[in-house]
Length: 523
Image (tube, rainbow, N blue to C red):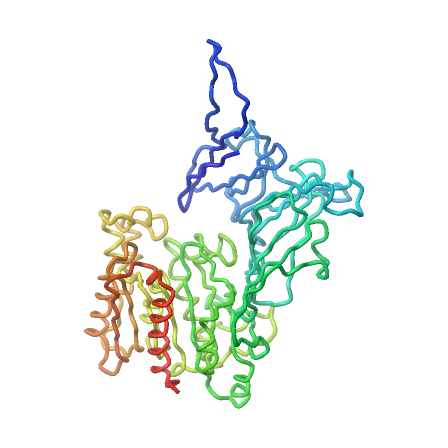
C-alpha cells in the first residue's frame, strides 16, 4: 500500500492506494484505476496514523478523546470513518482481555512497525507456533522512550504476548534503527545514553528478553573517549504545585563528585526546550565533553510542553500549551532552584527515586542556562521570572517577541503556529501571551545575567529582529550591574545555523568560549 498522510498539530487524515495489478471494470468494459481511499476524514482534535498488518489497519489514534494515542484496528476496506475501529486486546489466560494500549496517562504510543518473518525465525519452533506477525511499538513510559514487541497469533485484533525492551542505564535514549526488510527475524534498535555512544543492536523478535542473543551491529567510535570517567543520572523534581514530577537528567565526570563531597559549588549548565510536544532525550553528545572535562555538570530539564510524559505533558490543562504555557517556565525555574537549593514552596526531590547529587549542587553564581528557538523563549521568560537565579544565559535564535509575531498573519508561519500558542487576535490569548512574552516583561532596573543572543539573517522561523530587539530591551531596561548582553548575528545563516560541519563547530566553540569565560572556567 501507498500511504498518504496529511496532518497539523491537532488533526490528521490518512489515505491509501493499493499497489497491485488488479483492476475493476466500469459499465463500458474499460479499466478503472485504483483511487486513493480515505481511512477517516479529518476531525478537530483527532490524530491518527495507520500501519498495514495482515489485511488490517493498525491505527494509533486519540479517537474518543483519550489523553494519549491508543491502538485500534479495522479490516482494510471496512474503515467506517472510525466507527468500525476496535481496540487491540491483550489475550489473558482468564479470558479478561483488556486493551493493549488504552490511551491512558500511564504510557503513550507513538507508532507501530510490522514484521512478518518466515519460518526461519526460530528453528526450535514448529511452523504452526510461529506468530502471524510481530508488531514493534514505540512510545513513552516513565518519562523515557520505550519499545515493545507484540506477537499477533490469530489476527491483528488480539496480541498474544507483549515484551518491553529494558536496558541497564536509567537515563537513555532508544528508538528504531534502520529496518528496511520486514521479513527478517530481528528488529534493529538504536540505543545511546548520556555516557554511552550510539549503537545499533539487533534484537530477535522471538526472544527479545535474552540479552545474550542481542547483537551490536555497529557502535559509534569517539576518539579519546573513556566512558568510565563519566556518569549519568535520572531523577524527578516536584514542581511548585506539589504534584507534578519533572524529569531531570544529569551527566558529569565522576571526579567532580569529590568537589560535591567537599560541599563546593559546582559549575552547572541547565538546558531546556519545552514546546511542540518535542522530547529532549537523554542522548549522547560528544560536543558536551569540553564542558564536562572542565568540571561542569550538564543538566537537562524535561519540562512540560515537551512530550517526555506523553501528550498530557504537552496539552491543556496540565501540560504547557495555549493558556497553560507558563508551566514550561515554572518547571524550568523550579529545577534551577532545586539545583541551587533555593527552593520555592513545595520544591523537593520526588519520593519515587533515590537521593540525587543534583540538589544544591551549585549556586546562582555558577549556574548557566541555554535554549534555542522556542527554548530561547523558555530562557527569556525564566530570566524575567527570576533574573538573579542565573549567572549566564545562551539564547539561540530565540523566539522572544511572541506577541508581535503571532498577531501578524502576514508572516508565512504565523497562522500554523496559532495551534501552539493561540491566536492573539482573540482577547484571552492576547492577554495571556503578553503576560509571559519575554520582550514585554523585562524587569526594569533588575540585575540580569550575562546573555549571548544569536540570530540568522535568513531565518524564516525566528526573524533576525527578535534577538536584536530583545538585546536592545535588555540593555535599555536592566540594571547597569547586569552582565554583558552580547548579540551575534550570522549574515548568511538560517534557523538551524551553519550546515557546514566545521562552521558549526566554530560557532559552538564561540558559544562555549563565552560560557566558560562568564563562569570563570577559562584555562
